[in-house]
Length: 176
Image (cartoon, rainbow, N blue to C red; front, top):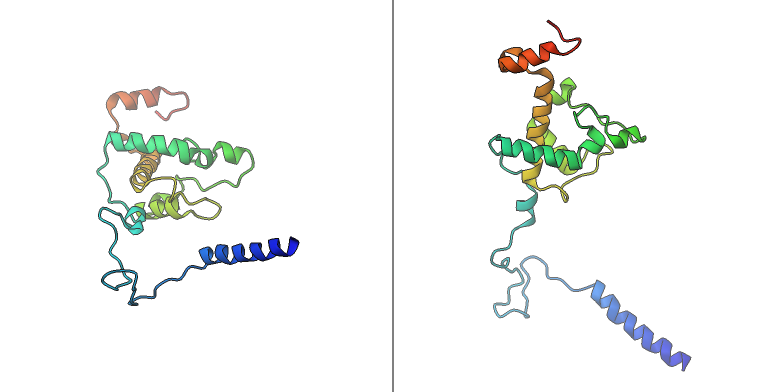
């Protein structure tokens, strides 16, 4: 009885092994399985190649809707480490995780949008890649929002509305 069970199980193992080690066709090989005997098959109608979903998204026009979407996505995915204002002092950092650089340092102010997009996509240092978590369009929205955060720190006074400038000057410790 025991020998019969072992022999049966060894046969099952061979079948399971065949599932993991399936034959495949080399490029340009013939395949008798198909009527045209060509191993290379066209992708199914309507399918999207993986490169099309992971490549750089076109740069959308900057609108309030895009910035709002970027703020929302930034708050969810970036603020835990980078902080609400982009200083690199998020809640995760306050709990002992290594601090990311501030978006306000000159190196990141001068970095191109594609650099920020690529870092979100592929990660950097201890930062996890967000390729599978944040869509290309949302990555572009986050980059736009980061640029808005950077501008908010250093906006020239002549670009402010008079009422906004007056409110800033009324703040305690503000330059007159």
